[in-house]
Image 1 (tube, rainbow, N blue to C red):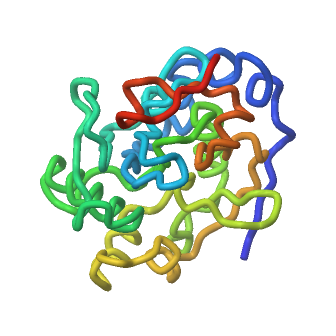
Image 2: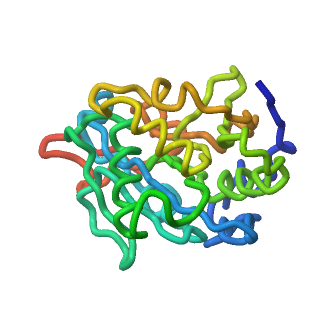
Image 3: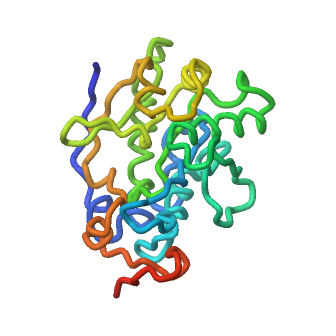
Length: 247
C-alpha cells in the first residue's frame, strides 16, 4: 500500500496558537486544493460513553467549540454536511442523522453522502472528492490543507480511490481522510449501513496512506485526553450532574 510522509509538524500546528492562528489559519483549508472542488462530511454523533455521554463537539479548545474548529477546516468545501449533531449550524451547512440513530461512523458517512446527493441533484453529480472528518478533531484546520495538498500531488489515475491519514503506529484514521465520491458511493451501496464498521465500508477502496504528525490527529475520547489538551467541559456540553473541570 503506498504511503506518503508529510514534513515535520510546523510550530503552528503543534504548539500554542495552532488551529486558526498558525499556517493554516481561519479558513486556511480552502487555500489548498484550489484546483479541485470537494465536499465535506463531518461525523459529529456518537455516545461518548467514556466521557459520560457529553456532546464532545461542544467542548471548547482555545476559545471555540471543537465543531466550530472542524467547520472552519471545511470552509473551502463546496458543501458541508454535519451528521448526528443537534447543535445550531451556520447557514448553508447541511444536517443529517445517521440511520439508525447512533448507528456509528459508517452509518453517518452514508447519511452524509445521501444528504449531499439530494442537495446536488443526485449521487452522480457534484464534486469528485469527499473529505470526511471527525467532529472532535482538535487541529483539523492544520490537517485538511495537508490532505488536499497531497491529493493534488497524487496521480489522477482512476485506480486511486482516496487518501487516508495514518498515525505513528500505522493505524488508519478513516475520519481524517479524503475519498473519491464515486468509489465511496459504490462502497456504501454494497451493504446495509446498520452495524457496519468504517473499516468494512472502506475496505475495498484503494487508498494512499499519508503519515501525518500525530498532533494533527488528536481528538477527545477520554477525560485524560481532555486534561492533556487543557479542555474544559462546559455546562452546555454536559448532561445534568456531570462534574465540571476547572480551567
